[in-house]
Image 1 (cartoon, rainbow, N blue to C red):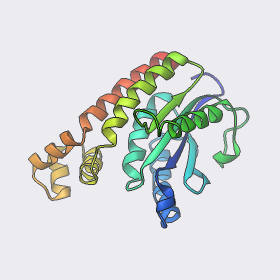
Image 2: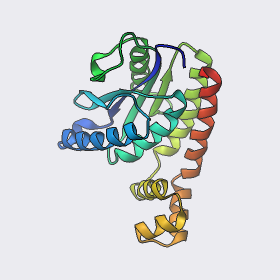
Image 3: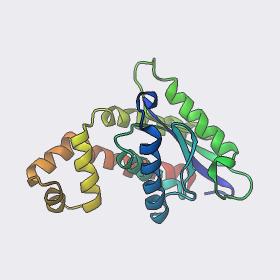
Image 4: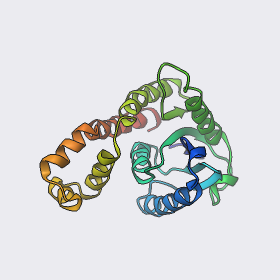
Length: 214
């Protein structure tokens, strides 16, 4: 990662106007996510809510962004998220609160998020978008996540629950015991919830990011 270059993530909640309890649910989920993601070194600064249904952060290593995206989608359920990720410069000292910072990375992240919102009337909707100075990377990453998000939108709540537990336990038998299900049911939920495809997306995107940004 070049000096003063960072990745910024800006996300908002889909259908937020229909949730009366949005502030409480979002605040609770983000507090837990901030602690977990700071400890796991996914993010440099805690999440900061910048509008009623929007929040942002600066990530650590570029290559960890695919894991972060997956973990946010899992942790913030039942909230559904749109995420814009921008790669670029951030001038000055990186310190809390993140909503007082600015620069190229924030502008790119904002542009990526607006691109998602603008896709609502297109042939297919997306949930994740990237923007940087590298147009080849942007095209590749956005194509991967356009396909990936098509699967994500089909995952049921029961399948998400299985995915969350399996990601925490990493063993089929342990996940089944925690969920009170048999091994075959857990395995079926993971397959029908496209878990293995999502794992491949994370692994593949790490390679793409490392190739373009080193």
